[in-house]
Image (cartoon, rainbow, N blue to C red):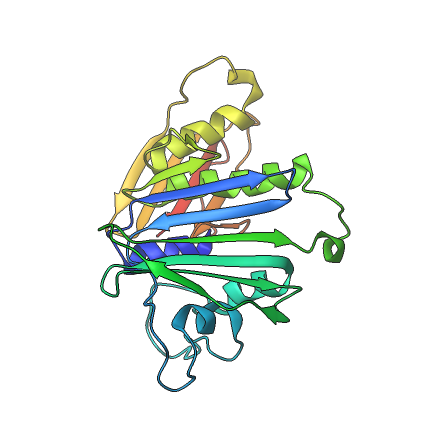
Length: 254
C-alpha cells in the first residue's frame, strides 16, 4: 500500500486502487490505474523496464538521505522484497505510447523468470497490476488466515482514508470512506464499543497546509490516546503533544 501512496504523489492521474484476496488460491492482487510502466528495453541493462523494476536487485534508487523528498522507501526495493518472498509474482502493465500490454511471472522466490508476454493494447487508460502468492511457509503459515486478511484489509482502509482523490476497492466492493475525517469517524466507531450504535462520532478536524491533517475527539477511556499515520504507515509514538488527557487525537502526515 505504501507503494501506491508514493504512486499517487508522483502521478496525480491515478484515481483507482483495487485490492483482492483469494483465500483459495492464496493470492493477493493490487491494481492501480494512472500511468503504467514503460514497455521498452532498458539501454544499460538490456532487459525490459518492468523486469528490471520488479525482478532484478541493485536497480532501486532513492538512497541519498541528504536529498529533500516527500516520499519514503527505496523506489523498488520493497516490490522486489515481495517478489523474493513469493512462490509466484506476476506484473501486468500497459503502455499507451507503445500500445502494448506486458505480463511477466517470476517464480520460486524470484529465482525463476518467465519470458514476458507482450501483446497489443489499444485502450486509452493505462494500469499496473501485481498478483502474488506469498511463500507462506517462510512466515510459519499454511494459508492466508482470517487474521492475516483482516490485517491487510485494514491497510486497504488506511489507504482509502489517507490518500486524497482516490477510489479504493476491496474484493470488488468500494470502501465508503472519502477523506481523513470519515476515516477517523470509522476508526472511532470500531474502537469505542460504548458508541457502537452511533452512526458518527463528533470530531474536530483541521488541515495545516497541504500535508498535515489532525482530528481530535473525546476519549471514551478517559486518557490520552493517539494514532499517527506517516505515508499511511501506522506509528504508535510519532509526536508528543501536551494535551489534556481526555481527548483522542489522530495525526496524518501526507
